[in-house]
Image 1 (cartoon, rainbow, N blue to C red):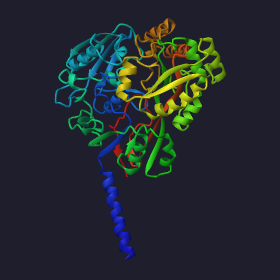
Image 2: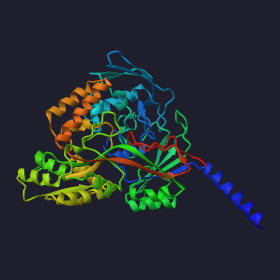
Image 3: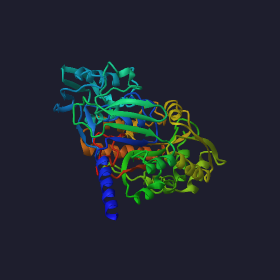
Image 4: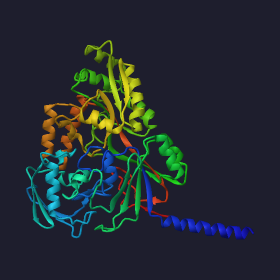
Length: 491
């Protein structure tokens, strides 16, 4: 009887393993729901996290290690003066609606992204382009007005994906790309479903269906993983639950790095924050490690400027304004605010913002800055803060790679203006040599650190937790992506 039970149990286990090995579906969790699904028409990182590499592709693509790889262009030639890039497109590429990709689609996409009517959130990526010309059906020549050392990298951003004129205007609700997955369904407020595209030009993904569930509540995210309702959370919003998952053999926990500079964004054009002494006071009032411990349960790297610590050009500037509440109070008094300041702090949904906001509000209260905390949904944040600059302070992670150039943009939501900084970025834009570029990156970091443009808090970690039988999910996030093209179930 015992032997018969053991044999039956063994058979059942074998059947379970076999079923697991053959599994071709995945439910993946995300905190934020994107406002739409067109990466060429929005700033929200959540857009790329759904569609980058999965649905849409560019001439190049950024791999999990940050390297530039061929995308829709299988190869390219760069002229000796660095001004002409000739891309050869892959043959046999079709969009999900059956239309064929050709050089005309590339011309259309890049001209659309850099045109006067462009709504591309990263229009600056295309500023060096002087002309885009179709040489033949599968060859495109791009002429630059000046050398751009990061041009191939920029063409791998989600904002630079190639779209078709037949579907470009409806990509927000019905995205049509060339990637290995096609859009199937969007249940607003709940999930987006992608299905394997059988007409894909490259290697077919192992997964047949991917459902991306939006779970803004941290506790619900943890519960969904534990229950198996979600099999992967590439950016788990509950760092306090990491030890629990590390102790559970059903899960793999991978703590990686991101490009997410988490900052106390400041409206530099609005009194009293237009006074550098007030911004310096805030910088001195911030205890970064206490914020990391309180909001991130110790996971995160302190930063003193808008730059990722893992980058070779990173400067350690945390001590530019060390934690010093007494000096903060002195600076406020010097600025005429000895009796204190009242302001608002608008917080989007991510837990790093909501939890971090509580800690920062307590820290600033100690030096005489009283903050009214205003929780906002993501769509509200994009409209009120990012678009209309209707805010005093906010907390957000900027996850775009090497994005220090945003401080030179006119009308950007920081409302920062510094001619010396702009000159550094202008020089950087025409500099191709790695050593020279790194030196310019360091100059830029130092300027905005000394100007205390924002409160620089910490580099956002990538707290990945997923079913231990999964492989192929990214450890790090060099770009905003949940690339599932290489994900598969194993025993």
